[in-house]
Image (cartoon, rainbow, N blue to C red; front, top):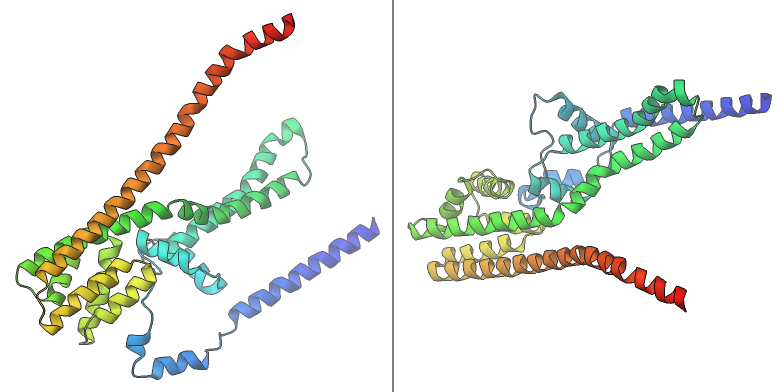
Amino acid sequence: MPDLLFAAAITAAALLAAGGWVVVCGLLPRQIRLSDALDVLSPDSSTASAEPGPVMVADPSSRLELAGAWFYQHARVPLPASSMRALTLQGRSIGDYFVNKLVLAIGGLLVPHVLALAVRPLAGSMGSIPLGFGLLCGVLGWLWPDIAMRNQQQQTNADATEALNTFFDLVALERLANLSATQAMEAAARLSDVPVFVRIRGALERARLEQRPPWSDLHRLSRELELPPIADMADVMRLDDQGAALAGVLTSRVKELRDAHLTSERARAHQASERMTLWMSIPVVIFALAFLIPPILTMSGAA
């Protein structure tokens, strides 16, 4: 028994020291890299900087969202580029994303202990079983938003592509109203508040305030969101600076994008139909086995 107590004391002291070290590291100011400082001081930093990702907090009055944003800023949890892209296309904030992870992780940690306390009068003490299940459920709760986001990625991409096609149609209509290329894109971007429209509107507004053409911003936005049609549209609209007629080129390009989107949607529908056929064949196989097994058993017994 003394050995167990000594080991428990050593483990608790080590955990306490590690926790204190993590707290001190979190409170220390982060050293700024020299390359980042030089990029800020350079005159071309406004054009070379990357497009901003998802907003930190969408609703400043939400305490939960503020708590999630505070956790992300102070815990320095890495956020992959794929997750940032998905959050941007879904119009979600970083605070909302991390507060979902925290709530699910804390709930996963506490639910097994609450259930163990509820059934303790009937089943007695369960030992360390609730702790193990709590850790497992906590890890699953922390990873669940990432799993859900990955499962929704295909639908998110389809929604973004559909929004882009609508935006391009609106740009073509605005262009037919004798607006310039930049004015047509700005007018079309103001017609909706979906995430893709908002990001395009932000890129155009930033270029207008800095008094420069928005084509490089749109190319950068296309790379960030992994939506090549934005760059294609920027290349087409750039022809307006050279005095080229855009009506025919713009209309044909919009038609090509529509046809490509229709082809991808048909492929998705075909895949969904194949999956439905697979699940529909399972009951048929079960009924066939139900009808065939008795005669087979009878024949084998007679033999």
